[in-house]
Image 1 (cartoon, rainbow, N blue to C red):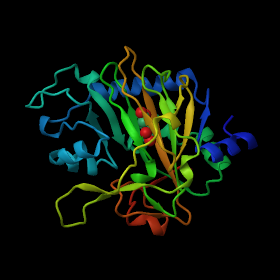
Image 2: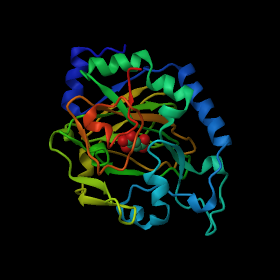
Image 3: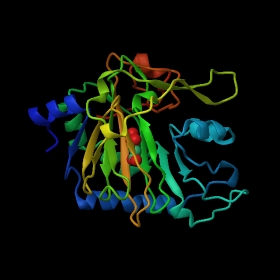
Length: 301
Ligand SMILES: O=C(O)CCC(=O)C(=O)O
């Protein structure tokens, strides 16, 4: 199962994404969901750090007060919230457990359940069958897509945020812990859109200036008719090439759409841009990534 067939590999290379249904068992999905329930039950975010997550550029820039909470989350387990879930003092307007957009960006490093999944033999075998030589885990997220209020993720390429030289070294592994449907906000892709580089990059402000981010370039308006919906069942793993254009719509349905997702980088011969926002763990990271990625975790541990 973890080894891709020649046809699957070819499809991934052509489309820039690939669905592997049934990659994780129901028990494995339940273990991740139960663990996230415990983590959420212990959530304690002070009101001034309650940060609404948005993929819209203008809204990200408005949230400067909590920028540092986001920028320094690369090696931590932090909570980011849906829009409109707080009053002006930061008090919850909805039950806290229904307010979270995502938890990021280092569950893989800090939590035993998510570490086990991320470094599982079948994930390692999958990475090997994709030809990765020295895969490192550069970030992870648990995304909730809450019923009724789960926000959209606007069209983007992951390499805009996880930029490397050369490009083509970043890969997302997106795991559906619940069925992802047209109604609750499944992924949509533009097949084949991973072959023309990146249209914009998010860069952090230079050291010594006010912490923040800005974009170099801009996301073009995409032709909606090019996007292909990708509903999948619980347990599916979706491989996402770092440059493929993808999005998800908001969730207006009664059902949540939980996923656990993490990104790998081929560390061999790759330079992780020091202007990326994500700082990450591990001493054995290869020399060319050590400064910018002080804690990147090798997949094969
Ligand atoms: O889960 C989603 O809705 C979007 C996830 C995504 O864009 C990503 O993992 O790159």
